[in-house]
Image 1 (tube, one colour):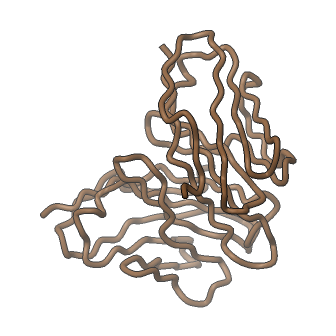
Image 2 (tube, one colour):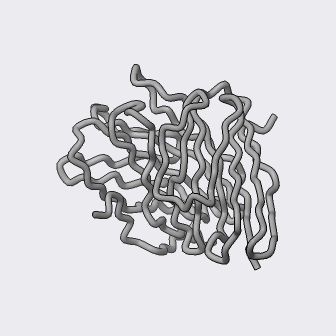
Amino acid sequence: AQKITQTQPGMFVQEKEAVTLDCTYDTSDPSYGLFWYKQPSSGEMIFLIYQGSYDQQNATEGRYSLNFQKARKSANLVISASQLGDSAMYFCAMREGGYGGATNKLIFGTGTLLAVQP
Amino acid sequence: DTAVSQTPKYLVTQMGNDKSIKCEQNLGHDTMYWYKQDSKKFLKIMFSYNNKELIINETVPNRFSPKSPDKAHLNLHINSLELGDSAVYFCASSHLSSGGGANVLTFGAGSRLTVL
């Protein structure tokens, strides 16, 4: 069973607008972590934001925020005031087992390719 | 100053050859990983070592053999390369603790392997 689902293979957004990238997950573990990574065309994987399953508030990091809806098992990434440099592939990932769990194994979604248009 | 460095960045080789990719981290992390990203950009864990001990060993052909001489290094050796091994291989590192913190994975820049 797929544990991380990103249903948007590609998206367009106008510069300076906000965009939401969808991510749903499936786990029976009450303790888990959710991550978003950015992969620009240069290929490196850049960590953006983290949400723990017991965190009371939605995570925010600058222009990135995570819309965490636990009951719906969704962890959407919101990018505010999009910039041209935000054009990249975005991956949602999940780790089961709390902060470190036994192995800190991350399972990735298939990614969403975001194109920011001027 | 590179936190997680992989060499080589590009590797082009013939089928049947043996090749290695090296990885080093200077972040003081105790856990290192190898991930494979295929042509459709899908990322999948292959191996992980914690303080030189193998803790994740996914269903990977035994032609792939990781080696961790110390907790700052994790190398990947691939024997008898096949066309399907062509991919980008990412090394990553993190802390591994249950006491708190996100234990975020820091990735290297990737090593693109092309098997002809």
